[in-house]
Structures are given as structure tokens and as C-alpha cells.
Image (tube, rainbow, N blue to C red):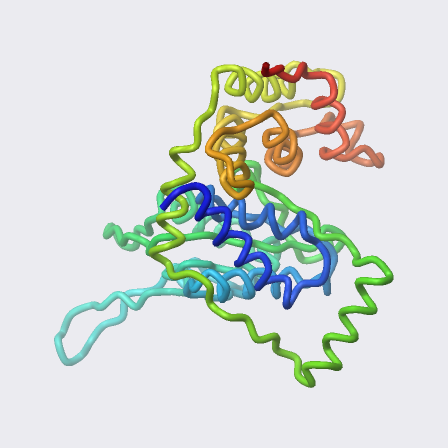
Length: 317
């Protein structure tokens, strides 16, 4: 498979997903970019903005297995990973796999579960494996976690620790639809005469893995590598607003995402605009702001946008 095929198939997937999602083209493209970069997505926004529908639609269009876990305060790690059950016929314990054994796992309202349950996903997200009672089980390929959380509902929630946030390649906010888009949502609902949206499978799991492999061959020049590094270092040097900047994992996120974005655009090389497009969703959630900014309207995204304006962009002849 070549980059041109990745772009063609990727855009076919996006067109299929757009049957269910009206507008939000940039958000959809960034979700697909993250999947091609073999990363995880955190969707943080208000209820009712089709976050769950996006995850289900992508799973269907990509031909991937999909499972959903509703995170609640009484959810246990074994409810996600699985549990060993004693078989009275064989007189042995058998491991019953949990919902984490899938291609796309929707962790719905992830911040409603306590830290012990949240941390059950850490090994799966980072190493694509699960260890239960000393035995390690490999996860299917691809394995993508799409998590959702409600930013305004604080009662009964457990904020994600920094180590968990850092495992997500991007954090995206969907936002309300425009007036015209909301009217179109109603029109489509009337036309199909049912709640479910019919999404066709465009790809297979094997094709998705092959597309991820092609992304690894996208060329990145030394100038782009230096640009990526300069952006990340800028987050560490801004001591006025940022308490803790992005780690090297942030640099790797920019590298992986810029390659995937370039491939979706049909290019086998990365340009500065690819990096600028993905920098805010890739790095914002990795910043810890100064304590005095916690109760202001200053956001991690707005600070990241200001930093991008200050970092010199490499020029190519």
C-alpha cells in the first residue's frame, strides 16, 4: 500500500462517518489521524454532542470490533480486563476476557470511575497487553481507546491523573453544531425514520494495520524534527503561565500525528502546516498551568496557540 491509497481509503472512511455526523469535519479528520498514528483519543465536551456516535461510526466504517464500557464509581478493573473463573469440569481456572479485548474500546465518561479502575487501562494503552494474575495477554491489532468525559460535571467524578492523560495522543473538543448543521441533523433523522444510522464497512482490521505501517514510512526532515522539538521545549520554558511543560512523549505525539496527517493529505513527507494543525490537540492536555490560572478563563489550548505563534516556522525552498 502507498500513501496515495492511505489518503483515498481514509477519505472514503471519513465520507462514510459523515453520514452519521453533521459538520465537525476537522474533528473527524483528527480522530482518523490519531487512529492511523496508532494512538488513543480523549473526547472532552458536553453531553449530547455525538461523542459516542463518532466512536461507533468510526469502528463500523473501519471494519473494526467495537466494545463500550460505561464507567461508574463501582466499576472494577476486572470489569474491563476480565477475570479468572473456576471451571468445575476441568478443575482449572479459565480466563474470561473483558471488553478491553477489542479493536476500538469506548471508555464512556472515564472520569466517573475511581483511579484504581482508570489505571487498569494504562498497560493496555501503552503496551497493548493486559496482565492478570501474573499472566500476560496480547491485545488485538489495532487497539484504540476512545474515551469521553464531561468537563462541567464535577460531582461524583475523579479527574484523570497526568500519567493517564499523557497516554492519550490527542484531546479533542467537539463543540455545538451551527444553526444550519442542527437543522440538517433534524432533517436526516426525519428522512431515515429510525434512530440508528446505517454505516458501511469500508476497510478491514488488516487494512487499518497496513495503513498504520505506511504512516511509519512518511519522511520527516531534520528541519521538521527541530521544529517539533522547539515547540515542545517552548512549553517547558514558559514559566509565566505553565507549571510543567510537555515531556518527550509530547514530541513523539507530534511526530506520529504529523506523519499520519500528511498521509491523509496524500503526501509522503511532512510540512510545517501538518505540525501546526495537530500541535494544539496533541500538546494542550499535557500542560499543567500555574495554580493562579486554574480559576480564570485562560485555557491550555489558548496558551498553546500563543506558543505556536512564537516558535519560528522552518522555511523550505
